[in-house]
Image (cartoon, rainbow, N blue to C red; front, side):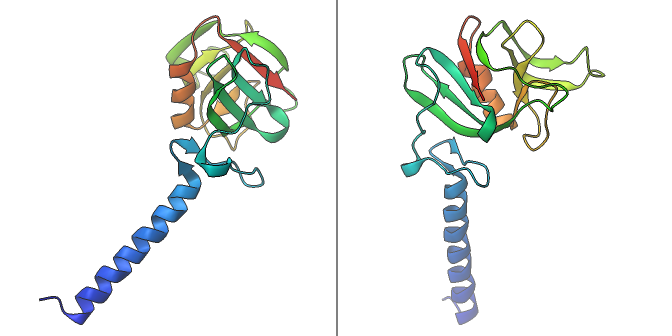
Length: 166
């Protein structure tokens, strides 16, 4: 038989669990990462429509630090997710690009062998989507948290279109 303390503790654990689920649900619903502070999360836990052209399989909006994945036919499959772009000295260019190549465990030959896991290179100047701390600016790349970088790595293939908007 449960004592009063045990019942109260069990209720507290249940309540804490429910609150944790509610908080985590706000952060990630159905695999969709929450938006950064100040960026509205998608409604209903579904991906929000990408602002890019239909043909773009990856979309970036630099002004809001958001990125999306699509199926290449206009249906958003992930996003928006938080990303960070290049610092003012090394800006991320805007325009339409093409995925050149991928490297799951890339290290930068330009920046002291810095790790760039899940790198998806979208131009011929070494710019890529890759894992890192999205709170830090990059040297022209689109830096994503590790879970989202892996999703971009898995979804994008050479010759896929990438659009970067201001």
